[in-house]
Image (tube, rainbow, N blue to C red; front, side):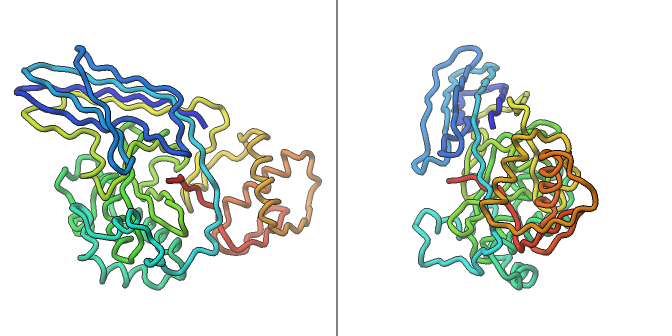
Length: 351
C-alpha cells in the first residue's frame, strides 16, 4: 500500500542553534521509500545521517544568526504489512534467546519507569496465558482508563505521571504501555511516525512489543488504523525518537503534517472492538479474495449452513471477511457461515 507523507516545520531562531530533525520515513524491508525530498527555506546546508542501529534517519542543520526558517519533507512510501496468527503465542519471553539489541528494550528508561510498575503490572496482567494476550490487555486497559486530552501533558511527563493522573496524549499512552510491557519482561519500544486518518493530522506515537520473534505494533489511542502508520523511528522512548531536538535559543512557530493513501483498496484495520464499524461492503473483490486465500492456507474449517442462496463469490467473500474480523479467540457463528477457529489475526511491521 502506497502513502504520500508531508511535513513542514517552521522555527524562530534567536541565537546560534543546532537542530537535529527526525522526520524522514525509515527504510526497512517492509517500508520502501520510493521517492523523497527535503527542502530548507531559506536555503541552508544540511547533513543527513543514520543512527548506529538504523532505527532513525537524522537531518542536522546549524543556524548561526537570528532568523526564521522552514524545513519541508515529502515522500512516497510503499508499505508491506503481514498478517500473522498469534493464537499460539508463547507464554513467556525466552530471555536466553534474545540478542543484545532486543534486550536493551527490557530496561527502564527516562520516560518508562518499568521498575516502579512491576507490582501493578503483575497484578493486572500477570494471569493472561500468553505474551500476546498480556500486551493486548495492557493496550485495552490504557484505552479504557487513561483519558486522551490534547495539550494535557508536556515533554517531562513520564509513564508514572500518566498512570497517576490518568490523562495524556499518544506519547504518554505509548510510554505507559512500554513501561507495563517491560515490567512483565516483554521487550517493548517506542514508535513515532505519520498516521493516515489521524484527526487532526500530526505526528503519532505508539508502541511495538517483541512477541515470538516479531515486533508487533499496538496503539492504545485507537485514533488511527494500524495499517495506516508510516514509521519514522523507534527507540527506548521519546527521548530517542524526538521529531526535532533543539540545541540553542529557538522556538517552533508552525507545524503541518499530512499522510494520504495513494491507492483505492485501503481497508482500515484496528484490533478488537475498534474494528466493528469498518465498511466491509465497500471492499473490492481483490481484497476479499486475498482474505479468502488466507483462510484456505490456514486450513480454517468452514461448515456451510445456508439459509439463503449465495449469489456470487463476492457475496460469499463478504460473509467470510465479516467473520474473520469478529474472531476473538472463540467460536463465532454469524449469518449463514459457521467458523471453527480458536485464534485471531494481527498486523505486524517487520524490523
